[in-house]
Amino acid sequence: MRAAMARRTMVSSIDVPDNPEDLDSPDSIEVGTLTIQDSEAKMPQKDLWERLPHYLPQTLPENNTPVLQFEILSARIMPPDGEDLKVKRYVIYMLTVRQDTRTAMDPQPATIERRYTDFRDMYQNLKRDFPQEMSNIDFPNKVLMGNFSASLIAERGRAFEDLLTHIAQNSTLRSSSTFLDFLQNIELTKACQLLDERNDACIPLLENTFMLLNKIFMDRSKPVLLILCRLVAACTSSPVPHPSAEKWSALALNRYETLCDIDLLPLYIPLLHTCAHLWWQKGRDQKPITDRLTDMSRKGISINNNPTLMQAIHKLDPRSETI
Picture 1 (cartoon, rainbow, N blue to C red):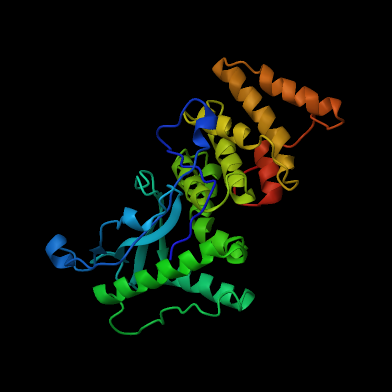
Picture 2 (picture 1 turned 120 degrees about the vertical axis):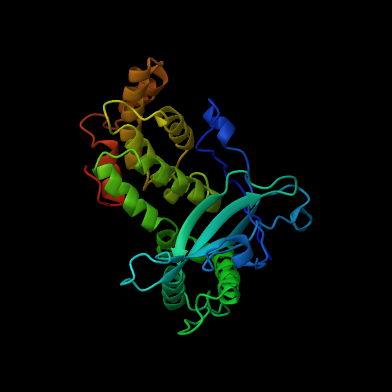
């Protein structure tokens, strides 16, 4: 059974409305059964396995409530044939996360790649920390022979989907650091390294991670707002802002409306200063932002000599990027 998840926001990294409030509308989730295609007939490489997304609208709520789905849609062997023969070969699983409704399949799924060991480590850590919540969940054993067969990959894919669905449906497991690390650490580590090098290639990685987390967690949850602020900081780290800086900044400002999470408030003033400067660069009216800062100052909140947005993020979630 797939669980309905409310208050999600689907955000396209390509086409975001000018009004950030348009982004805060319900999104959907995912469904899937595993079918194996003849990989040799489809591709000359025998190490490729894939299937099409499985969308079953009749199984989704009639009230069009979004439903979160995890699907393993393909797998490939690394390194490819003929490359780096000294490296032990392993399977990379392509995981997609969608929010589907009864009337539409999610047009902007988030996709990440994970190895068997990534799933296994997450399972073992959750089993250790939350034995009761994980008591009825099994995990496919590692095999010494035949671990590249299509049938085994399909079997593992089903098990991975069931594991992720179970985690997402359990509030304790879903809010664990282990699950969050599984979802974002690989991409976030790479993005922060690129950001440290002032490489704009960090932006698509952060955008994909934001869209992924935004499908799983609440719009104003700590993981979502933290990655969103990191995206804003990355887009404004250079003297010339990234082309997507305005849309992500506008969304971040909108998300901070009515926020009560005390852990995330240290990011708000640096975010306001960052957006005020960006608005000035773009020739936009800064007054709504500066008025908000003035209002906070009148309430006794210090709005000067604050850390930069990246520095404030680093205090909450230290990473490798330059601060």
